[in-house]
Length: 394
Image (cartoon, rainbow, N blue to C red; front, side):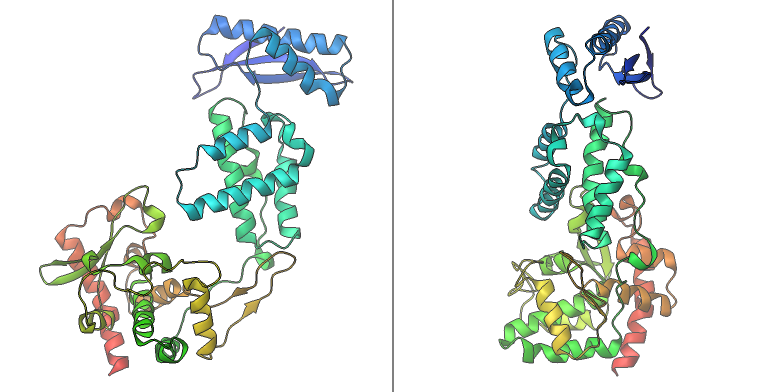
């Protein structure tokens, strides 16, 4: 006999009933999507009646979904969305994402649909851990980098989390997927040495023939070297982002990855970046006029141009070729400046806590508003790095 019960933390009643699987009766559960117990009990009874009808009609497993859908439609009861319908609706609700994130979501969902094939028409609650594990494993086998495969699985997981919240599923199987570790991981980024940074700057006039463009690339390199921020954020920096608090110049900005939370980071400016900015022939608008509107990724984007600059500078690289559709990866990219700054800070005796704060790896609320003592403390920590840099450049 069917009965209802509430799960811990959920306001909805869960229906429990038995269904015939062709060999024996098995226990089943499904949300009723109602907080009213009497209504939930009626729905649970309907679920049991449907299961009994299916057993008496000796419905085959292949036709079971269609049989139950028709019964639910006749009753006007709870409808179960298909994988294709639910994922498509969920993706449409994410159209307010920034273009780069939306592109990843589109690729991930299309990849999942292609993998599912005809099973896209199965119910959303029929996805199992074995399905999600096989999807991830197939992505790896087809040559995708582990980080890309993990990002695709993460998108699928976001959608299934919503399905759980809406009562269409009991749990999210993606949370239990075993991911590639050890030798299969992406090759870690390596930091640039001080000598390599000098070679990058010296190569700018040769690689970028226009003086204004070469100057902007030199500024971009120093921004990465002295702030450790991502290339997308560095491209958007403006002179108006510089604040001065009692003689301390601070770069205040909202990182692209934290735009939705509106979290402002503040990083004290140090030499040689500080002096370089003061010597530029302009002091307002974009810090990188010729690069300000350049795309970050893609052919001709800032990332690929930086990779070409690294190659032309004669810097030794460890390159890992991708298999299948996987892309090759380099051990030193613009993102390596984050590792570079972290290494330099720690070598200068800066505490791990301040390293995290400067690189934006701590909690979001920590950057919302710095008091003056906090700004002074961070400036002192950055000064340790500046003093060591000054000695090397003298």
